[in-house]
Image (cartoon, rainbow, N blue to C red; front, side, top):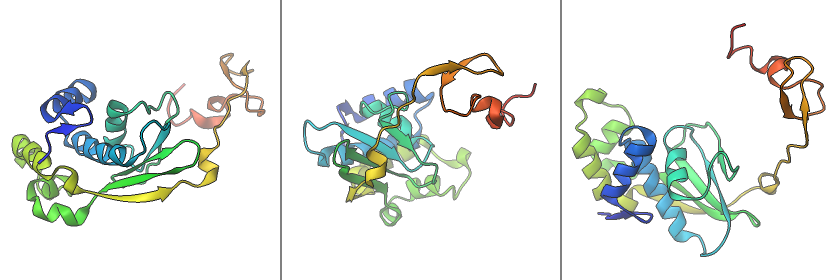
Length: 192
């Protein structure tokens, strides 16, 4: 049973998730367990980045518990659908990957039913689910030492901003003569 996730008590983290995410999302709370497990294994005092293997819930846990955000570029997201993340040293790429371990969910039917969508959402008791998450704690996580590929450690520099000749808006110069949106990137987003 866990009492803390990061610097928060379990109850305070649930409340913080509710404020940030809009409701006390079990995925963000489980994500908090993964982040906390990885953080406990990182050496103190290093600068680190995060990589989430899903774009659902887990990135919010990273942003709540670490300085890694989408906006500062320290959080990268790969939409692979795996409930896993890595925290790793920015310079060396050495770090830890944590994953919600499917085998360990067998002992927690409330979590397993929710995670695999084995019963309708309205049949899930949120209180029982949160208590199962609290009871399972770090024991729900599998952690492994990892090494990030060197190519991922290189920071992309955006270059200077220029005015797009088509939309007349500023964008980072990519040498292609027009911004990515005008080159077709926005056609499936906006109807004009």
